Length: 223
Image (cartoon, rainbow, N blue to C red; front, side, top):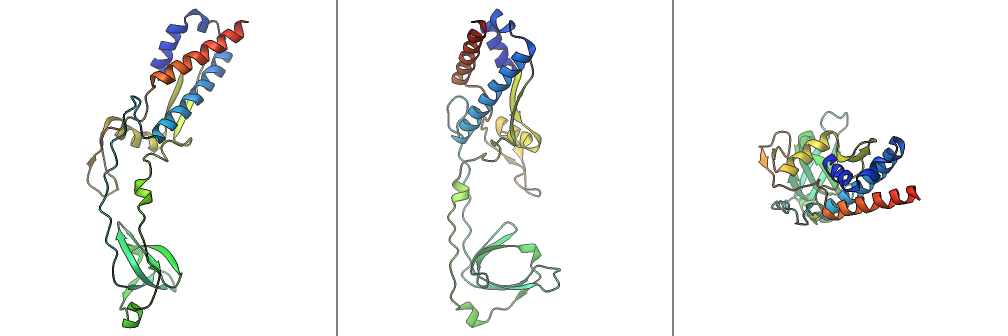
């Protein structure tokens, strides 16, 4: 984004160069925070910088709930593992999620941490319990919710430039989507080609707002 600042410098010309280093750093820091908020809001709207919508997330076929009860001891290695009777459950990834009769609510357990599977008595199969209804709300939620928060989408400035970008592992993930690259959705999963979803990029509106903000400040300081 320093190239975008360079364009502002060309437009502002000599007025911008009249600002001292400390004042310049303060102005650019405020502008970077404003740009960070704007970029985060646009990502939340699921839009690329050109206004086009992101390619929707590919929908997974929801797993079919098990129509029988299961009983097991959990967790493996515990001195006194708990007896779990579960009804209306789904097995997804390494998680077994369903209605835990003893707890009286929906619970999740790691499949590979089950100590031992036990036979289910006929009376337990017919025992009444609540149902696990998969709403799918998490899958339908907007993409990149964590990526665009202040912990991952960072902003900063010196007395010469401003920047907005991702940090750490978030930077690697964002880079895959920004360019439409390949990555593994899980540690042992096969490589997947992700559609290009441009996360960072200054829009014409943001450029104009930064320029207006800068020129307004320069006008105030000159008077």
